[in-house]
Each structure stands twice: as C-alpha cells, then as structure tokens.
Amino acid sequence: MAVLHGVALTLLAKYAVYHPTDQTLMVSLTLAALVGAAALWSALDAWRDVPDRGRAWFIAALVAGVVSGILYVIGRAVFVDQTGVSELGGALTGGAAFSALLVLVPAGLGLFVGGRIGRTRPSEEDDAEREGSSASPAPSPRPRRRVRVDGSEASPQPRRRVRADDPEPSPRPSPRMRPRSGEPRT
Image 1 (cartoon, helix red, strand yellow):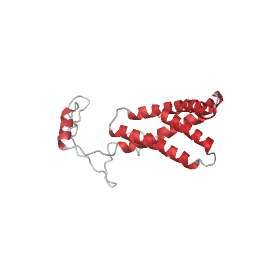
Image 2 (cartoon, helix red, strand yellow):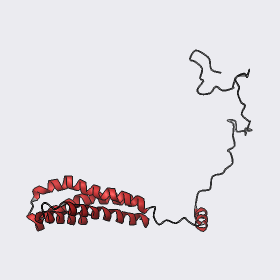
Image 3 (spheres, helix red, strand yellow):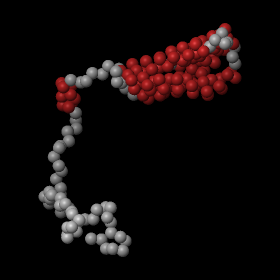
Image 4 (cartoon, rainbow, N blue to C red):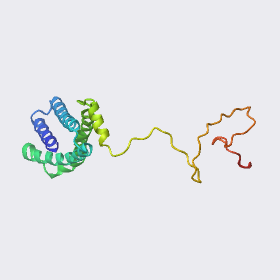
C-alpha cells in the first residue's frame, strides 16, 4: 500500500506540472483507486479469514503513511522537479497522516463488508462436529441447589406475596425500604 500511495502521489505531482489547472478529475480518480484498492484488499482478507487482520491493517496504515511520504519525496525529486529534503517534513506529517487514513478507513469498511459476504450458513453436520469437539461442557438448565452455611441442603420454599393489608411484616425489608438511621434493623 505504501508503494501504491507513493507512486500515485508522484504521478499526481507529475501531472500537475503539465496540467496545472486541470487536476480535479485526476485527483478524484486517483483517490478513488487508492480507496478501492485498500477496501478490496481488506475485504479479501476478511473473506479468507486471515488471522489478526484488523491489527495487520492498522499497522499497514501506519507504515503506509510514513513510507509513502518518503517515497513521494524521492519520486518527486527524481522524476518531477528535483525537490529537496525540505519537503520531507510536510510529507512525514500531513501527507503521512492523510495516507494513513486513506488506508485505514477503507480497510475498516472492507474488513466489515468482507466478513459478511459469501458466508453460507453452516450445515447441521458442521454444528454437530463443532459441538463434539468443544472442551467445555454445555451449561445445565437445572436450577442450582441451595446449600446452607452448616452444609445441609435447603429446600426450595415458594416466595410469599406481601400485601398492603398483611398483618405480618416481610422477613427482609427490600433494599429500597431501608430503616432510617434512628430505627433498629429487623
């Protein structure tokens, strides 16, 4: 990606020398080609299930930004107008940041889209094979047994509904109805 960006920027600079007023179409086509290349390549990586592809594209964007800036200055010095080292500062700051974003944003979109295209629903045989190979047991749908502090098993008791006209107070107050600071706890 760095070489592609460096070559594209150098060709745009060369085009700007011969056509200084007619750059809009070429700049637009070049940006579209660069965005399309990053999006397509990352979508293919996601479609092929390349491991750790997000991190690889993040690092690729950072490297592409810096290296394309250096290649742009070298290409412009050799092929366009003998640019000196003074252009390197701008190419490594603003130019590198723009190139990095021009790789990172379409790559993120390509990773998102590429992971969702062409996927078929796994068959029941594949599901059974995956379930048989899993090391962890499936969770039990039964409720857990309640054990008291002394180790004896507690029997499940149905909860009692509390009504406003009930003479007997609830054994535990709800967390919302805590006793005031002056009243003893029940």
